[in-house]
Image 1 (tube, one colour):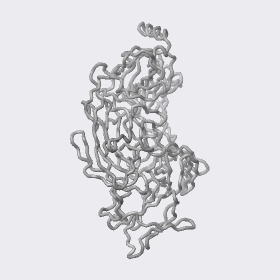
Image 2: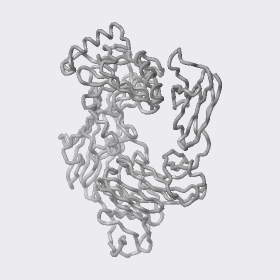
Image 3: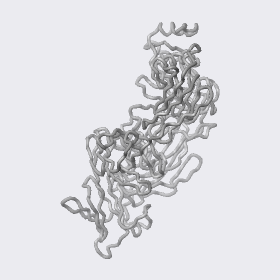
Image 4: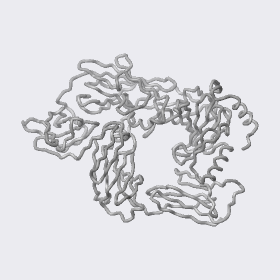
Length: 631
């Protein structure tokens, strides 16, 4: 490949010095979009996404595709990736200081890179591709154009995703590299605050219940409306966001500090992040709250199984131990990368629990009911024992345990039982009783197989963050005759995959096109896959949820547009693959799944463009659709 004169000069310069010497160079980083002009961000480092922390920053491109993307520093391309998901079209560039910059969701690469990628796509006969060029094969000076911004991959709108990584490929916060293009004098904003009991003996406002605290705001200072009573070990949870000048986007909060009576008790600083621990975000935020209410809080404590490295805690896990008669003045400070600060203050008083409460519990109770919250069985009843001793009998195999009420909430009685002390088969209160479903304890670090309700679930030693009390349920819904295989509690996250074997009770005549789908109460379906073997179907998942079987025997949809552009779609299982050939020779198709569009990209002007053209699209269930035409 021929290099232009400036590139040749750069190559000679780079080759003259080993990376170890070049790393001593301190030339500054350049902003990759519109250098030296005011820019705006739609995303910042460490934002809490559903399954990962946001790495790097998202730079706005005015809602349009086509902004020139500049090399942030001199160096060469080490990795090129083209994907229909994730980062889409992405470049990875190594710099003399040993750091790597990443440019994602690109629409196009620089001409010489684009030509190289297309050549390899034709050679390997694939659209999605990952390439590792030779050192200095594609070398650039600072500010040279390396690509054009776009909206490829998992992007939800046109922008440039930009990262800086260190030698260990840990992500660093780009806003610490002196980019004056971004302006920010707005402190973080608090959206919510909550306190959670951490042990069975903990109480918040006399209840064993996570409690969201009403706040008052004065500028960027927030304060709890009332003094809070608590006792035992508690955890604080904060929901908030940061804003930057000229943008309405809700960005992440980098640094949060908790001070108790003037002494720092907890700090989180999401400025360096390891990709290997990204899934631990599921124990950084309260997963149960996210699943049921949707708010994404920061836990200001470190849960069991959380191996993230950006916490500094005074106590072992950052939780607070509230003692009787003591007063705790708490200040929570939130900082953005520009050191804008906001503050939340509250006072907690240590008070022994009151057995009788003059408020309702936040659940609808009919007779006898229960919930499992972490490792605690929580039983409710509205019955009165009419003078008898109001205790709850827990029936185990071979023994009965009796416990007294933990507290009364108006006419509701609440009992608490730690499941580490045993898993009851049934419960009895006065004349009201209930058989409990099979509950199985799964311990992290141990492998275990559970076989119940037409399901066999296999846990590896890596499957869990923390102990799980698994419940399973099988039913055939009368409304649509779907078999539903339920794994609960859905409020508990999995660390890695579990293997599930289902034994369907219905007959599926077309097993070839019948697969597992995740479903929800709204009737949505998401393809999971699965392999049939002797009337059973196996699949892997990383989510406790409801699963069902559906048969998809309908071929994908193909609609021809002009100039060999096509709309492709599949209503149920989704598109798996596509292939085009001209007189039997493979032809590159570019794909944008957000728009359901594919289109031909010829290798060069000399490539043959007449003959029998065929397009085959295959869905995840194995159905195929074919389009034929003569060019």
